[in-house]
Length: 330
Image (tube, rainbow, N blue to C red):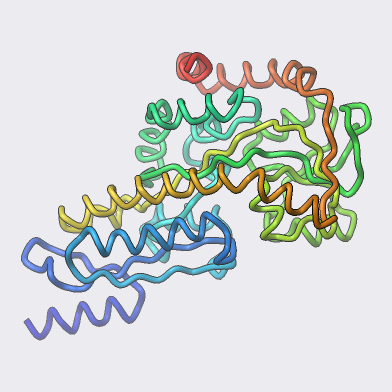
């Protein structure tokens, strides 16, 4: 017994989650979550709530660590760590960063996928994204245990523009999934992939001129300081899966596994509700303070039309025509 205790203490000291059997359910478990965003961001708050709820629902000691402000890299790194079962057990991950594992993953964050917030909520609430979550679990051994998101993405730019013609060749940072680059190329912009943590400096130095982001990110990362024009393209409503390592999950006893699943659902709901509520308020507050200039965009229909062939080709390429149709019909 003393040997087992020494082993568990060594695991805790090294940051590893101990492999727990049914005879040791009362032993302490250590879970690790990571966010590339500060404490004030809703995704970081959702992870804090998740860890707290796991402890509450499990009925056993659960210690936890939440790494903030990109201490362990970006969410692409977290996803790899979760897949490998090391360093990070939980995180809120952009679907674009799952694309090297699951070709279906970027579909859930595709520009022009959702008509409006009501359509987005129907798709998420009805679990229409389940086939994508199953593919991620099969290909990467990472579980989707909840969904954050709900922010409306717009173009945040160092120069204004209310039409596609005025935005022609705008150097814009896009997410890592290749389909995002192709869509913005089809709109006549000049997309490039830049690490999220490097976007501010990249705009400041002129490497890029813009990014596409939701209000929470604009506020927390202070992008308005280098890109004060928010062009209201409303081209996407975010889906950000709350993920958990499959390898870690299988090491947990059944009661703790159930606590993880329940806490993931509830933390995801909290994140969605909070971000939807705060999205418009944040933009209005930044505009009132003179930090952002909200620029109406008159080419939404034209942008969606130009993007359609790219989206149709992408959906066909990944064999997701039926799933895409179900989402569109929701």
